[in-house]
Structures are given as structure tokens and as C-alpha cells.
Amino acid sequence: MNIAIVGATGNVGRKTLEVLEKKELKFNNLYLVASSKSVGIKIKFRGKEYEVVDLESFDFSKAKIIFFAAGRKISEKFAQKASKNSLVIDNSSFFRMDPEVPLIVPQVNPNDLKHIKKNIIANPNCSTAQLVIALKPLHDLFIIKRIVVSTYQSVSGGGKAPMDELIEQTKQSLNGNKIKSKNFTKQIAFNAIPHIDMFSHDGYTKEELKMTNETKKILDDKIDLTATCVRLPISVSHSESVNIQFEKSFSLEKVRNALEDFDGCKVVDERADGGYITPIDAEGKYETFISRIREDKTIENGLNLWIVSDNLLRGAALNAVEIAETLIKNNFYGK
Image (tube, rainbow, N blue to C red; front, side, top):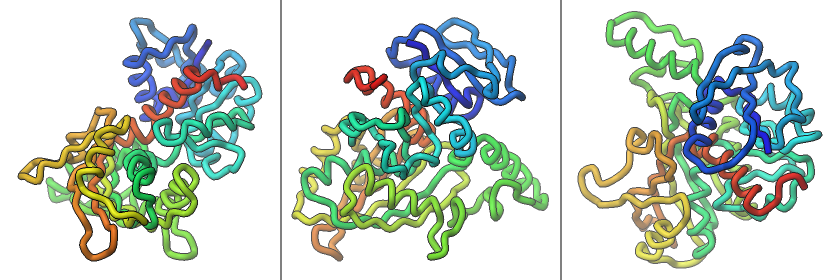
């Protein structure tokens, strides 16, 4: 079995390589694919040096599984071509709401992999991925009716250029220089921007609508969800303040136990100074962390959570590799 990574030199592509390095996923050959400007770059992986090849001329049939980590436009142009002979795991938003393309978080809805029709599997939005992995064990027990979520998202969700700009703006601000934003609608350094992606006609941004629609597709279309998504001057990791209303009554002990026992979740909730997870704590870690677990006493069966995860891992590279692992383990790939 051969593997290819499209967008191998970008943030998510390099993270995918890092995850593959640590995982025990076995394959014969690896192809690193990117745009012409990256052709010839050499990247070390498992002690061997690989040279980046050109996306435009790459023969996709060489790989059995192809990770797309290069954004929506590249997926739109090349993913269906790649899927003719290979199985595509796509990190972009392009196929997520296609009814014939499964949208997968392996811990949450692995059985949807039995219904691959186009040889394409979609990775959810990074903020959705960490949310549903915490919601799944609670929904199974208590049935979620409604969710109100506010996100505090890192600049890495926008790619490398926004990360570089955050560093540059921080320097300019500390030096008292005038700041002109390139990748943000307003200054990001020492600021908060309540706007991620384009606005829709009803005032919600696409990022907020992604969370609503993707959570319904992955977990349960009966769940009502409303979101406000905010960009913060943080390099890596997304945080979420989540308010949940259940149909059934619950106890905090059962909530904690369900989260602690669920694959991919880790509870850090000490109710003391520093007894919770912050974005820096989550960076580079595979777990989705849950803190500040408490009842919402203003509504019936209400619960508040604080959820933090490395968006480049759980929301992208790690989730994609775990999809591949699940496919291989259950002999779904190639069908």
C-alpha cells in the first residue's frame, strides 16, 4: 500500500507527516505532493529523505490512500480525479456536506465508513472535530437537545501566513508601530476578532454554520446548535465554551466518568487555580481536553464545559490519519 500527501509542505501536511511518524501505520511508498513552487524540497521521514513532486503532473494511481491537506480550491480541482483509483481523505470543506461523502471523526461515527460511494472521505472543521468527540459519550447517555458554543480559535486555523502575521503584528505593536492587517479583518495582535470566514445573509459566518451543519451530520440531525466563532492571538489550539441542554437528567459524576472513559478525551477539572487546560497546554497533544465541568442552574438539565484541543492535530492531521487507520483495520478501504 502506498500513501500520498497533497499539500505536504503546508501546516496540515507537515503535521500529517509528524503523526504518521509516530503512528504504526504501515505502507510501502510515500509521495509528497505540492505546488510547483515547492517541487524539489526535501523532507525527512522515518530516516529517509523524500523529494516533493509537482501536483499538476502527479499520477494519483500510484497511491492507495491520498491525504488532501492543501485547501478547498485544490480539493475542488483534484480530489475527484484522485479518487478514480485511490481513496481520498480530504481536510478541506469542499465535500463535507455532500450526502454521498461520509464526514468522519473515527471515535464518533466510524460505521459511516461503510458507506463510501465516491472514494472520498471528509475531515470535519477543526472546531467541530474537537466538539463532537466530547459530545458523543454525553449524547449517548443523556441525549443532547441544544448547544450554545463560543469558540476561541487560534490563528493557525487560517494557515501559515496568519501565523506569521501574528508574530509580525506583535512585534510592531510592542514597538509602537502602525499596524496594517493582511490576513485579518482587523488587528489580531492583542485583540479578539468575532469573525471567521465569510458572512452569510442571516449574519452568521460560514465557520459558525459549519459547526452547526457538521455536528448534525456527524452526531445527530435533531440537535440544535448555535455558535459564535472568535479568532484570538494564539498560535495553536482552539478553545470552546460549550453550554448543553440534555433531554435526560444527569449527574456530574456520570458526566466525568463518561468523558474520562471515551477514547480521545481527557478530563482536567480540579476546580483550583490552574486546574484546567489552556491552549498552550494542549499544543502538540492528541487528546481533547475537558475542563470547567459544571451544572447550568438556569435551565433544566443544563451543563457547561470548556473544551481545548490542538486544531492542527485533532481538527486535521491526527483525525485524517486515524480515519486511514480505521479504514485499514476494518478492511473498508478499496471498496
